[in-house]
Amino acid sequence: TGDETWIYHRKIKAKEQCKVWVRKDESPATEVRRQQYEKKTMFIISFMSTGPLVVNELPSGMSIDAVYYRDECLKKLISKLRKKRPLSLTKGIKLHHDNARPHMNNIIFDHVQQHKMQIMVHPPYSPDLALCDFWLFGYLKRNLDTYPDSTSLATALTKELNSIPVYEYQKTFQKWIQRMKLCIEHRGDYFEHLM
Image (cartoon, rainbow, N blue to C red; front, side, top):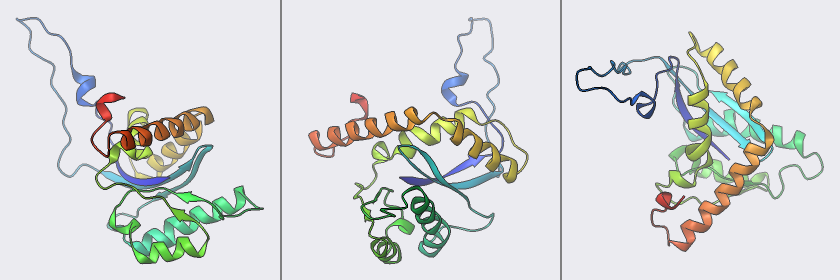
């Protein structure tokens, strides 16, 4: 599975983390907010139940299109999978990603089919079924600190991904299966409140 996310260089506590009780005569603490043009870097992360596979850093000023996704993300992912699975290569691999435009292009479908992989169908507007959205990105953003540049941020991100125990990845894939079952049971209706 894989997805992309923006990660800010400066860590700011989430709104939930800033909540505190105050007395009637006290003023609440100042809440720090992000500036409009705060420095951030986009990362495309792919992982499987045994851990991370590929971390791509999107160069500043670029956007992800199907050609970039194929050439910079999928090709690296396929190369990594071939090293991990020398006998079966990519045959039978099921690739899961959301319905973002770069992922849902004929260039991608053809490339995946050429490597005997399958793309799993993902319901539209369903972040509750995307492993990166319901687990990984929140985990990373909570655990990363403040970094002055994208190089140090990328290094810290990769280190953090590699420090996550394999059982956490496996547990998340089990939760994903439970979520898919709940989605089917509720005929695609929202089910997050049942978790």
